[in-house]
Length: 253
Image (cartoon, rainbow, N blue to C red):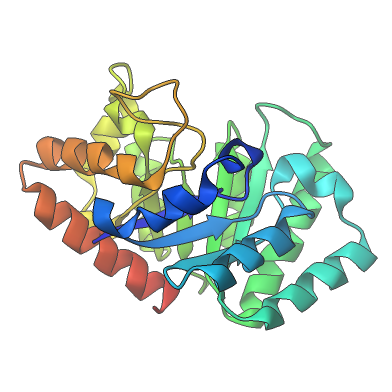
């Protein structure tokens, strides 16, 4: 079944129909969802959702745009949440030089601290990196040795993807791969092994064609899997089966 490695069902865009939507996932072929926190306030929400639905698990971490909310006290409080159960990863964490909402040195500091936390807890990491290729790679080489995880919404070169794969990471592929102008990502998908790809939505954002611009949800991953199958010359079923295995191996589920 489909394994969505990166969703945000705690987002207010789902407030009106969250229960109905999540209850419909099994019949739509979705077997597992990782609900990922981005803000300090969302950490508890993703855990609550994971406890409510047997097929939902949580990732806890602070997005680079939100690290201004972190200090030693809030970081210690966040760390306590990993004792709650059903928390299977640290994320999403990383660097975002597109929005540059927080000073880059502050982003780097808390990225490193959260990588160290993942090592301490022996958990995979979900990496957000936007227009920060060189700095992300530099920090990962120094502080992520021996860790596993996903380079979420991958947007860099096929050469860099291969480097991350050698380091033990998976490449997260979502709706963008279905966009007409996504030549670079399509080239990445064609050139890396299926054993190194995981599927993700980033819902409610990044809906694939033919739903681009609408609210995304995990059932739309089928369009992503269809595009990967087309690019690789294999069946849809092969894509779903292998990417589910990849995700289960990484999250140890």
